[in-house]
Image 1 (cartoon, rainbow, N blue to C red):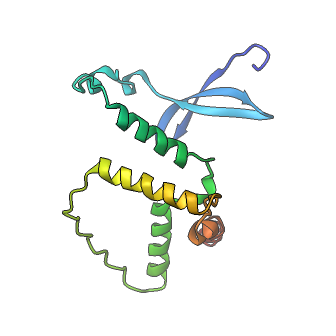
Image 2 (cartoon, rainbow, N blue to C red):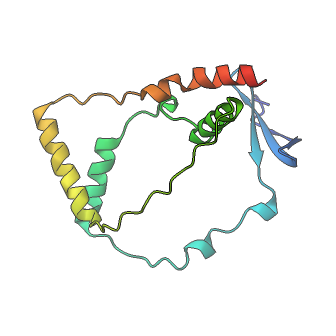
Image 3 (cartoon, rainbow, N blue to C red):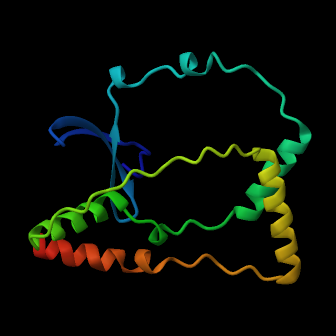
Length: 161
């Protein structure tokens, strides 16, 4: 397949549905990519036709460009965690311990309206002043919760399975 620059097509049942897979060489193994059926793919045009063509002011484009340049970095998947799975595991542990499930309080929305451009300008100004004070920016460090998540998940799965 690699020499011929071809991929294969296969079928598998996942999550109670038959899926079409594209099978392609990847490193020393194979990579399977789930494909969509024709009826699942919709034309994008109807979703975007109501959006008017608008020219953005140069100042807004420059500000957006500056934000992208200053916030760019390398992707580190270890700093992300599955909050839903973690909350579910915590809930299950609480129930297994015979404790009542914690009641979740609804957060009240803030009624404060913020001018986004003014907030972005203040953010850029703050960052410029802090950059002048300390020339080296520290790399983003994963939180303590993110650092322990894989180990906690593994230990939970061992006990559950």
